[in-house]
Image (cartoon, rainbow, N blue to C red):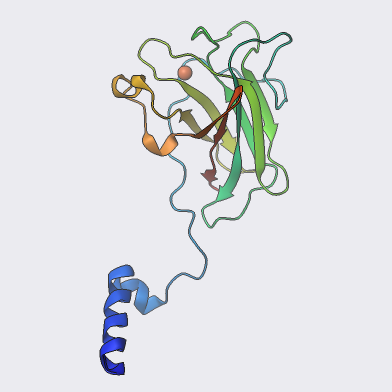
Amino acid sequence: MTSLQRRRLLAAAAGALFPATLLAQGAPLTPSCGRQTARQTAGPFFKPDSPQRKSLLEKGENSALLMVSGLVLSANCKPVANALLDFWHADEFGEYDDKGFRCRGHQFADAQGRWRLETILPAEYPGRARHIHVNVQAPGKRILTTQLYFPEEFGHHRDGLYQSSLQLKINKKENLLDGRFDFVVDA
Ligand SMILES: [Fe+2]
């Protein structure tokens, strides 16, 4: 192959990877975190003033344990320090605690945008696949309300709200499930 042929081939490959408009403007220098995390309804069970805590486990808890962690990022992939995350979910029977704060709690991401929640595995309830509700908010910005889902659940097909982009990445460890999700918010 001549060097001219090689240059033409490389140019054709670049054209396939990047739309002409992007090539004209110069390719972006920083990786994109893609679109903002999809918004979902809060549903009827949100309660304000949840306790600040990273563990929702009660004393003597013997339900399946779940550890979920991740990052809060801006659309240009910067960690969002001190982002608020307010979680609420159904218990092991698919019930929400509307009198107290079982399976409810808020926390703030650290300086690197990291968060970590320790809780129990919520159960499905009629019409809904297993999920965790959350409000995420960068300091002083708009609240992003959404829900996180679990992989390989039979309930997905009969839950009209389920979105695969909101699915946790789950690793099964000895006696707990370890889930991972990164939020992308207005920051
Ligand atoms: Fe729910």
